[in-house]
Amino acid sequence: MTLFEKIIAREIPADIVHEDARCIVFRDINPQAPIHLLIVPKKPIPRVGEASPDDEAVLGHLLLVAGRVAEDLRIRSIDKGFRLVINHGAAGGEAVPHLHIHLLAGRPMQWPPG
Image (cartoon, rainbow, N blue to C red; front, side, top):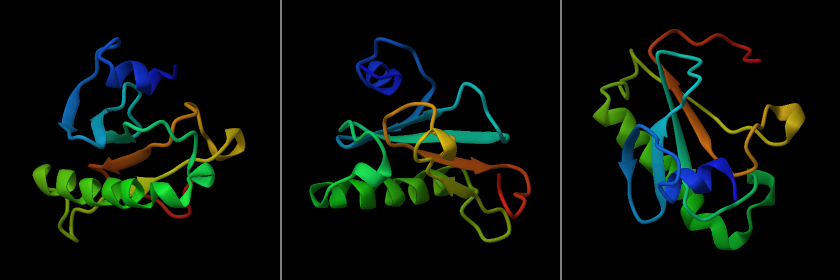
């Protein structure tokens, strides 16, 4: 069972900012920006490159939830903005083998990232 599955099961506490039938959103415990949320599907998908066509609806749902959460936090406007990041594999920065989207905001983002 991954760390995220334990959070979903409420075996590990988290600062949850959104939850619905398909996903949970909570604050990262090691934030890399003033706002750093993790958008996690409840269905355990190891990583984005291993998602199947059956996962299409949940993948789209995660992005729509990112927009809704950004609106709730008042960071969706173009002048404030936010960044979404998905890591795949160890070399890509993946730390937990459960697909998740990082939502980062609250400071100017640099390009290129990494």
